[in-house]
Length: 95
Image 1 (tube, rainbow, N blue to C red):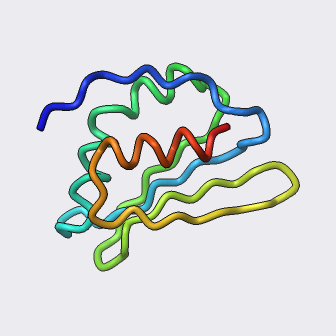
Image 2 (image 1 turned 90 degrees about the vertical axis):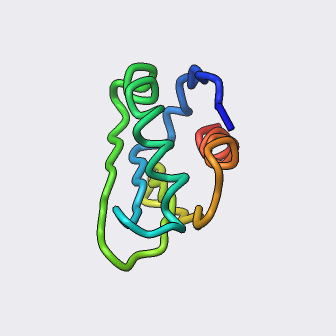
């Protein structure tokens, strides 16, 4: 399945940090790895002041973590999700 290029809009200024945590070899992280490879450049280009971290660690379940102002954090599991699913999740978090 081929995914079209998505241009990510700027996220809300309340979003201070975005972390994508994944396993470099696990099947459950396959969508997350592909997402990072394909969309990290446009994410960073459209959100130059947002800290975006990609953390690889063997044995972890893939998840998307977002830190907002005043220290509020959310963590959303993205195991076995496809690129479009991860895009939707990220867009919802960034609003």
